[in-house]
Length: 210
Image (cartoon, rainbow, N blue to C red):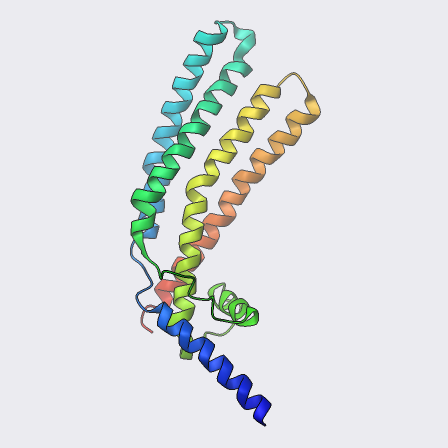
């Protein structure tokens, strides 16, 4: 029995430390920050950068209808750089202040199986652990912050792959399709991240009453 008691004591200690770290962890506007990015800043910025980069490509390369792929490639590369730099600024100024986090990962004291169980709860695949709900909610907040950051930066990679595909248009057919597939995969990944982001938001909203 001593062995079981030791295991229970260790488990209680891990959860006690996690509960302390979970205090004050809160999502205070990640949804609004990501929504504003995708409905305002990203579309307007991407279009402006694409147009400016394409225009610069025409001036550098010289106007000729046959060079359309090169113009597009320069424009997309210009947009890629701008989106990445803009993402750094937006993540720092808008995303980071929209969440209160602990100084270290709240789930760090827990065992691997305990962390996995928390993730299953957030995904709706396991019953809710009401005894440790603050820790589970803190885990959801941390996950939502990570997803928000990825959602801000991933569009830059989609534009980068698209730029490479445009650069290879009419040259290396195999490489063109490989890069095009990568661009499509990045777009699909955005959709999956957005779905998971919304799911964690629903979880936090559904458990906000304790």
